[in-house]
Length: 452
Image 1: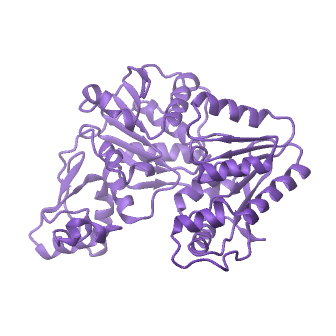
Image 2 (image 1 turned 45 degrees about the vertical axis):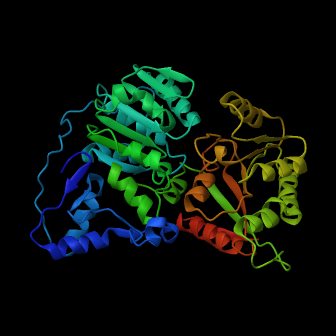
Image 3 (image 1 turned 180 degrees about the horizontal axis):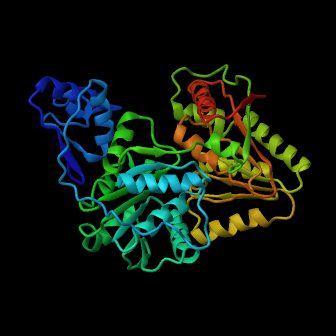
C-alpha cells in the first residue's frame, strides 16, 4: 500500500475479477466516443485494474466490501506513517465545536479523508485546525477559484496568525511553506512543492472530481501522506465519487445540515416551492433542453413576474430584508435586474474581487430592503450571514448546485430567526424532472418543503 496506489495480490482470480467488475462503471456519454464506436473500449471506467492496482484512498471502501464476504486480507504498507506526536490543533481566539474537533481528529487519525462539513458549519476553521496540527510540514492547499483562495489566505494569516503562508494565483505570488494555490496556476509551484509537500488539502473538492486537469492535480503530490478534501456536498455519481475517494480517502462525516439547524448552529429554512402552472401548450417536442430553458425560465415573462412579485412583497413587509436571487445565465440576471429596479445589484463572473466585495458590502449595509442577483460566483465561498430570503430562480437538477446554493442562506445572524427559501415546481419538458429532483434534494437534507 503506497501513498497514491496500492495493489491486490491474490491467488483467487475469480475474486479479483469480481472486484474489478464491482468497481467498474459505465461512463456517461461513452457511446459517443470514437473508441467505443470502434469497439476499442467497452465504455467503462475501472477503479481496479485487471492486475489489481487501485488508488489507495479506496482502501477503506474495498476492505468494507471484502468484509461482507468474510474475507480478511493482510495489509503490507510501503506508505510512510504519519507522526505519532502532532501539534495541538488549538488556535488562540477560537473555540471549536465538538463536531469540528471530531472531524479534525478523524482526519489526523486516518491521515486522509474527505471532510464533509455542511455549508456554514465552519469548514475553514476545521481546515485551520488541521494546518495547526501539521505545522512545520510543507503543505499545498488547492482551490478552484481565486476568491476562495484569498478569503482563506486572509483567515489563516490575519485571524489565525499563521506565518509562512504563501499564495499562488493568476497575478499573485507569495512564497511560503504552506502554499495556497489555484489549480489553474499549479505549474508555478511544481518545482518547490510537488515532491516536497507532505500535506495536500483540496477546498471544495467536489469541483475537482471530473475535469482532467483538476483530477490530475489531486492525484499528484507523491509524498503527501496527509491528504484531505473539504466539501459540503460529495458527489453521488459513482465515477466522480470514486475519483475523489481514490485521491483523498473516504468521506468523514459527523453532523448534517438538519443536525446543525436543530442545534441552533445554522438558521432554519422555510422552503416553499411555487407550483407554477404549465406554460408550454405549444411546445415543440423536438426542442432541446437549452431552448426549453431559455423560453420557459430565462425569458419567460410569467415566471419572471412571479419572482418580481415575491421580491416586491418581501420589500413591502420586511424593512431590513436581504434578498439573494441566483440565476444560471447572465441574460436572466440582467432581465431580473431590470424588473426589480432600484435597490438591486447584479454580480457576475466578470466583476473583479474588489467589485464583488464592494457590491456585497452595499448589499449588507443598505438602509431598507436590498436585493443581490448573482450567477455561480455566489453559489460557493461567499459568506453573507445577513441573507433573510433566498430565491432559486435558475432551476437545474444538480444536487451539489442546489445544496451549495441553499447553504448561502443558512448562516446564522442576529437579524434573523429563519430564512425564507423560494423555488419553483416547473412543469415543462425537462424542467419538471429537474424540479422534482430539487425537491428531493431539499428533503434528503432533512428540510420540510411546502408547496405554494
